[in-house]
Image (cartoon, rainbow, N blue to C red; front, side):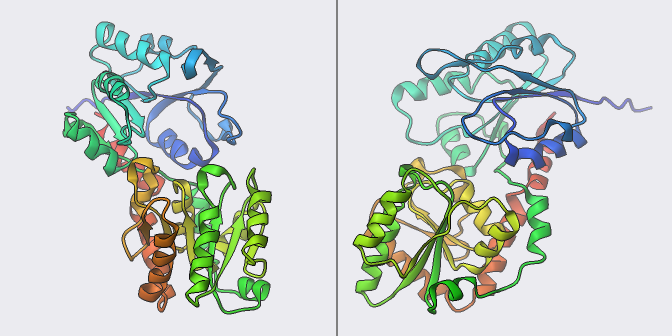
Amino acid sequence: MIEIIIMKLCLIYNYAQHYRTNIFALMDKEFDISFVFGDSMNDVKKMDYSLLRGNVMETHTRNLFGGWYWQPKVVSQLFKDYDSYILLGETRALSTWVFCVLARILKPKKKVYFWSHAWYGKETALEKLIKKILFRLPNSGVFCYGNYARGLMIKEGFNSDKLYTIHNSLAYDQQLAIRKELNENLVFKEHFCNDNKNLFFVGRLTSVKKLDQILKAMVICRNRGVNYNLTFIGGGEKTEELKNLVKEFYLEQQVWFYGPCYDEVELSSLIYNADLCVAPGNIGLTAMHSMVFGTPCITHNDFKWQMPEFEAIKLYKTGCFFNRDDVEDLAERIDEWFRVNGKDRNMVRKSCMEEIDDEWNPYFQIEVLKKNLK
């Protein structure tokens, strides 16, 4: 007779981000799991704990010196009846360091994993040293957001057998249901009253996104004889500055400040009917949000300054890259995208959607977890 052993799992995370609801709910369904969440993360929306049937504990994050922080109640989980743990591998989480060191010394049979951005490629010598120590503490491996980070860790000497690419995901189930109802409309043609190709950016209008580069690239394209429309979906600290640039560059008839949009149905229609998402800074979750509704992305090619989601961009299938901070090259890549891919919008939509459906969703993630949690 075969004895079936059910693993008891504890997920320890800095915060229960709303956009992670799907994957946390799937983990709740597939594993005997408890959750320990921190309680603060700037203005990021928190998920509804009632959607989880497993035990949920919230701990008040205490900010310490120099960006370090401590999560009470974390270390005590080591001495509870769990077989495995997944912690967010952040170098400044002092409670994570203490937990992992004690696990090595006092509970070596318990399996400890990190779920992390891991390596960026821009680390200083000191940061590398700290990370090399920290990321060797979990005895069972690291779930990395991307293959790029995984590759960098292998080059740093980490065991490839203990590095698992898990990617990222959004509210995929909701997005799929909405996507089935989408169709082409004239929202941009009616607003702009022209037949230009439509660029857009969705997200906070902040300095790190370098959105002025889109406007400068549009001027370069105009001087070459090609006009584009641009829609900013979102608000933020750079809104007025961007509006002033639009006036300075005489782009008032080609730029639409749509403002923040929190209605996913409304937002999905805008994305689906646009032609290209342009994100001059790091692209992050914007890539997934754009592609799930069928629109390709362009962002910069200096990957050590990117977020992991840049990997969803497959050259000339789901988007392309330009040389970081080079607006001349950005203008050229925008023009090139439409020369190469501008004739078959439906094929581009299909490629973008397939990329998300294949690897950037909670069902892909749950399979990675089920395969590698021993």
